[in-house]
Length: 98
Image (cartoon, rainbow, N blue to C red; front, side, top):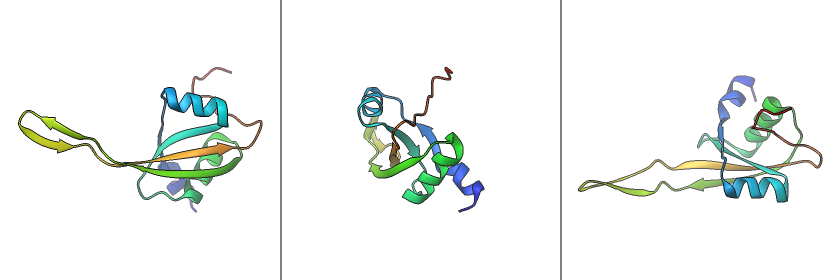
């Protein structure tokens, strides 16, 4: 895996009530990733970008919601989510606090 591909795999962290609960209880971090990403690519990208050790990765395809725009029906895009389980003692801090 080349570094250019790994730098493009992770799009953004998912910050929500559920993701903070999962981070506290299970030492996992949730990321929005490109739809073509694999588990090995996500693992390599997290280890490269955040300098942490990854234990495992679970992937999940999220279907886009059906939305109504006036009298027209549309839908949001489908996207992929990755649950990254960190090894014990490792953590990623998105708040920027030291």
